[in-house]
Length: 113
Image 1: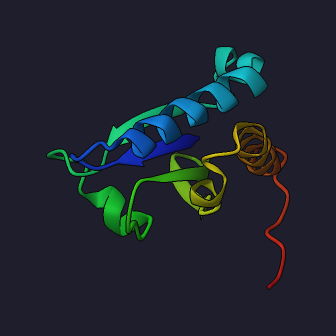
Image 2 (image 1 turned 90 degrees about the horizontal axis):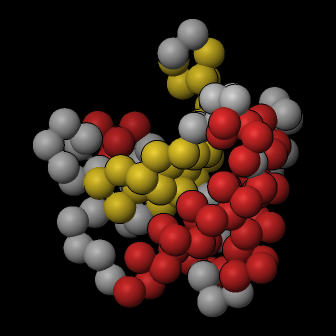
């Protein structure tokens, strides 16, 4: 699962991040999306009923979150915080989002800090 989570206020950069995230995931994982191996959702975490996302993923701002689930439960997740460093470099942004998503699809363990 890949989420692009945003708040009520949608600045130009936030809209660009959403667009680049959606394109990166759709371009890199069209088959997985079609086969329902992967899902992509754009969610306003401030909308009624979605407030839990802010706490679930410790959100401070608009974010791309990659989630692994087993039996409907979240087993691990990662906030792709580098999107804010890469928003003005579309190719690097797409490679980053696709690469991190691929790691989750492949079940790769998180690197140790």
